[in-house]
Amino acid sequence: MAGYKYLYKKQHHSSMKSKTLGLIVNPIAGIAGKYAFKGSDDPRLVQRAIELGAKPVSPGRAKEALSILKPVKDVLRLLTFPSIMGEDVARESGFNPEIIGEIDSLRTTSEDTKKAARIMVERGVFLILYAGGDGTTVDILEAIDQETPILGIPSGVKIWSATFATSPKNAGLVALRYLWDEIPVREAEVMDVDEESFRKNELNVELKGYAITPYEPQYLQGSKWMSPSTTDELEDQKAIARSVVESIEPNTVYVIGPGTTCKSITDILGLNKTLLGVDLVQEGRIIARDADEREILKAIKNKKSKIIVTPIGRQGFIFGRGNQQISSEVIKKVGIENIMVIATPYKLSKIPILRVDTNSSEIDEKLKGYIRVIIGYHQISIKKVQ
Image 1 (cartoon, rainbow, N blue to C red):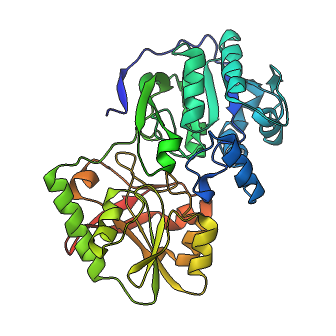
Image 2: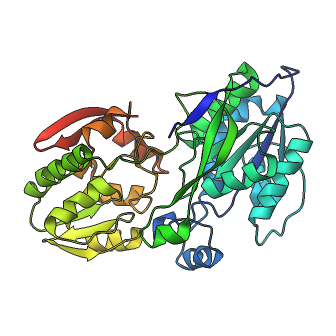
Image 3: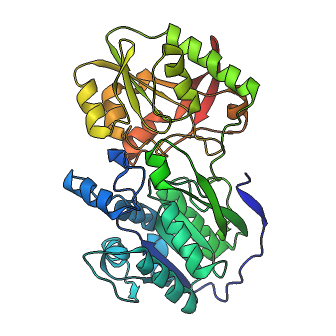
């Protein structure tokens, strides 16, 4: 799947003195990520995550993006929806936004997102900057199609679409460049995963359409690429798995991330790992399946532990996409030196650099640099993490 179809037209900006930006914050996006709920589309699971102590993710990430735009706030007209859908973070970030529309401040829905996008287009915004995940992207696409460019601040559990920047701050940088430097735009894939199937360990991905997004390849992610099921790919996965299995240490908890390459390890061990979850393995048995952050932290407390992950195809993320259960707190407890990254040669060839987005700038910085990637039986490659 291509991350975009082709370069699209530039949007003409009438004045260098005044730019209009729309801001939409989906307040529940990503809130269930650490709890292994696979998304935030089901309000019952969102409520359950809140009862378990989940805190909103998207407002803080929206603030990170706005921090980049703060130097131009006096010449930026910012339109947003009331309260938790943008007003709060805009004011906390030092902006004086123009508030449009109305919402129930205690509960927002996808219809609020669609309404916000529609009004913003009618008000003539140059760009809609939104904090959310794939579900939010689909809502905006349904509301405005390709009438106005959109740009995602990655905040959800599902972030497969090519409309997202690689980090909140990079979303701010791309927005700034688009509004003032007039970088071009592209047609970017909007993808979504069926959450009910996802929770049943089935991956059903659907292309929902194409949105118009500013084109800045250095700071934008591509859509997720699925690993091929060729004989060579499967054999490479088995070779990686044999190498990892030979290195398994006693009295150690292994936190094994999602994906077919990671699952190949437990297949060799004769264990039935979840394909899309994070499972914990110790002494040749699974001690927790589809574990959330709390279960992981409990299992590794005062124990030696290691993390095994594989990068997201094409996007290159090893943390922060699809495995938010392996949080910055988990990584801190395990230790950077105890992280194992695995990927087949073909998969790695399609990834220029590896990326991290743990929602902790401290951990992200510690992870950056160069890392060993196991690519076969006793074979490694050195890859840059950015």
